[in-house]
Length: 115
Image (tube, rainbow, N blue to C red; front, top):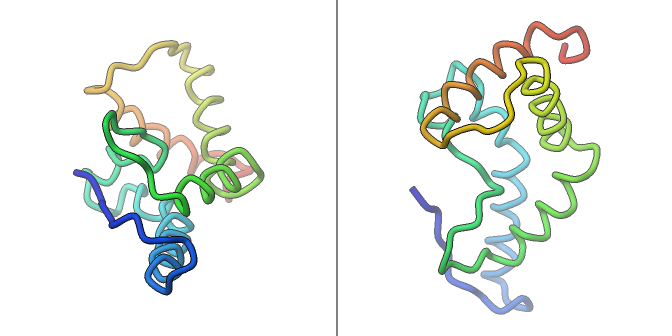
């Protein structure tokens, strides 16, 4: 599934509203990935680039600002890398990623630094 928006001009009110939605939604994405949510959420990613589609600029800006930094999403990415290293997993097939991410979230809850 793909969430799509019109490519509004940056100086427009609709761009600002859409950017505000992006910030609110992306800031809470870790909440949607928790096991209590529908399992299909574990298959979602805000980082995936879809061939032939251009990402909304506010989305790119949010990802550049938060994923590489010290945010919850960035911290989750670092923890996921650590989890994969501990499990000695190098290459993950797309069909296995949802189950593996659920295992990661369960592992993350057991980590002392995650509480």
